[in-house]
Length: 126
Image (tube, rainbow, N blue to C red; front, top):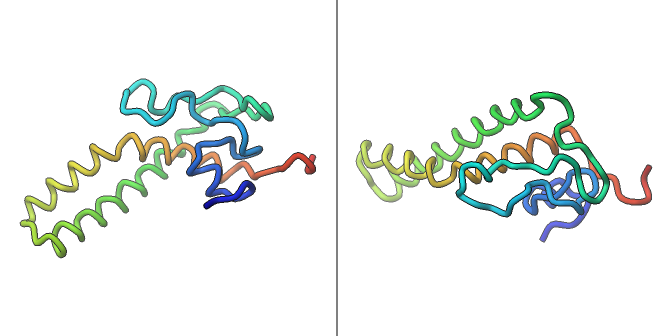
């Protein structure tokens, strides 16, 4: 679906943003709280240091906030207008969705953040 060289390939496959070969996260997708956002220190293929500077991923909090707001709006619209839930039911469904999607949002925010700053370079480019 996505090809190497596209940002979406790195984002949805959890690969290094520079070479699209090495894994970004230490563990595959999990709900274990201590393993959700564990990153490798460097790419196993190209050696890219993932923590570009101290506290680099603090900026991912803003990306996570945007993802959370978007998810909340989508769930509210579906719950209120398509499922005809009450206001309390709509907010309960938002709360449930946010809890369920929290691990995915955290991982997605981090990989989106680093992909904003690192571009793909194939083997021919130096």
